[in-house]
Image (cartoon, rainbow over all chains, first blue to last red):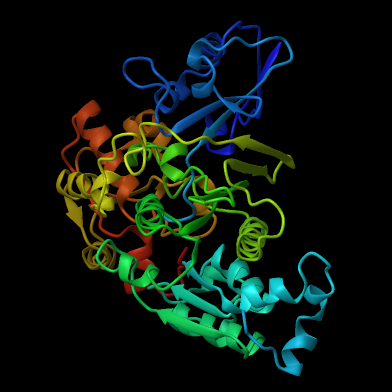
Length: 92
Length: 387
């Protein structure tokens, strides 16, 4: 199972789970699997057209998927996928 | 370089001077360096303390704020006696007492598109210790436009990020900047609200110290700066990762077709102006003095608090707790026959709650407490904790 790491700002949508396991064969299928399981995450990860939002980075291991095959990037059973949000600090 | 050190300086910096690859040349570079630290809060505190202690010759501090009691949980530059004083003043005094051999310049002003270029121009390196998206993009853009290195650090709750942006290596290759990583900020609605904010106090100490280390590496040329890489720390799980960051052809500052050649309006870029307007116009308001009259005159009204239980535990004014996230579940408990005052911490969430209740359930008797419980604590009852 590929492992997806959830950053703390998004864990309120995943019952505080920091990791999500998915059988998915591509980054897109893993993300779809994630938002099907935790539907509150959807607006935070995808825009109206279903694309990953520009203020959210998705990495496969230490590579930005934009420098790989974007959402079609293949993942295997040992893959670690990370969601990296833009964070700014404490001010509201 | 001809910078000479006094005996006192040689003794003070001796633990640097005996590192073979750092030695007195590295220390000279520090002494000749000018570093601007933007924000003297959680990140700025360790940055300023360590850069001053290390002997960076000129330090600039930008901050418009005054020291608040709630800063002391993490902003280790400040002491109890500094509360109420301008941060730059207290910070300068503290670091000058730590190292009298350095020069400290203070800018007791908000860092804006109007003054950013003038302030940054005099420095070699900028360390970003800010706490909001508009200023982060401003810091990034001014550094790219003026060709300065931007040592970036950011925190949220248990998460920390560090990188070195716009760094040119010895071969002349320029590294990525913040806009290569995040081309645009999250819209205000998706930025964590005050109910979801907060930061564990030690985290800025860790991240700000890592930034200070990167500043020293960039100045001295020792080691490999964190350029083209983003360091991530999850202090809760102690997971650390270092990701690659590449330059993007579509970067509006220095990609293939640059569209930003001057500083812009960053509040607007981050969508903040629109939100404030919408939220202040859409619901009926009541101020804390009017609420006090309602209470004093024992008029019949309902007071609803839409914050979270952990916030209620910090301070409350006896409102009925109905958190915003599940406000719809409480609709049946809200009176339709008398005035209902709705409050949160500062007035934003309660406005959203009212909007939900008006749109979804047809209420027309809801009033938003302007400024929330913070205004109550400041203007009516000083016994209520201000957070």
